[in-house]
Length: 186
Length: 186
Image (cartoon, rainbow over all chains, first blue to last red; front, side, top):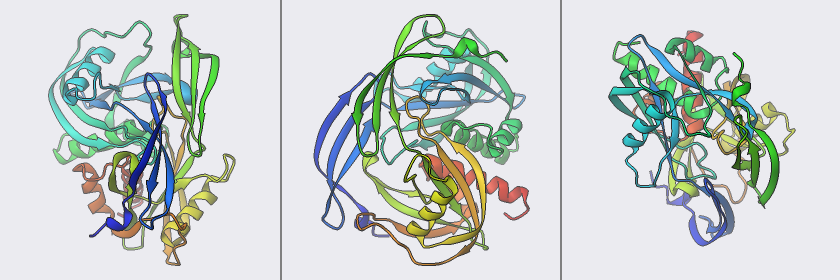
């Protein structure tokens, strides 16, 4: 399918804010009809998330406070890259170990997740980790989260019923469940 | 479970940028250990998305260019609220009709999706729409998208294999499929 009728081209770009996490840009683009429009967007370093599943089909999850929505929510282990060119699998291994203490024998790349492609370039790679081994958590002094675990089937029900609201957590657990089912493991 | 050990409290808030879509804030918060930290965040008006499923279990999908990631991607119909207090179901009906021409007899609220709760307060309500009737598309002059359709089972395979990368699209289609399966319809 020819999709040239959809493409926008950059005309100019203005830096609005260079923060610690968010870099905000306002660009002017030319539209397919020749008109000009503005695009406000976030540049983000990128991130990874992990669905760690025990041999008993339980998922290691976290309860974490998220300031923008003023709620403690259920999430899978996740974190930003240390550098934009950091190996994503290595980042996932680090985040899993630091946040939960677990290491894993087997890692499956479950693909990409763009959380908000309309206004952010953040790209999250999702992993399924199995063959888990428990070790010591290693949180930053200013990082606070409670680690717990729950059967994957119950988490799928919590997602379908709307109890789990975090985007990456919903996607990654539903995908992990599909993959484990297709392998005859869930 | 007592989760007071996780909560952050606002100390101060600074407006960084008030754009057309994004409102950027930098807040100072007090952490559970008494330390202070900064939080960069986006305030967003909120949005809705719809999985429109035909009687033949095909989903109406869109191909749309997303400037921040410089790609044409597959998405379900979606859009921002016109006002923060707009009825979300009405917004979903409007977006479905304007972007695809379809109206629907039956709407199911599939719950919330926070795309990036670490740095955005955007809240998306997901709907499943069935009993579809085809009408006329009504796009803005500067809105460009190609509408097509595909069997829901093939879309689930595209999600599991990593071909569909948009966050809300992955979540909402996987949830819709689970719901239709549990009703014996997919």
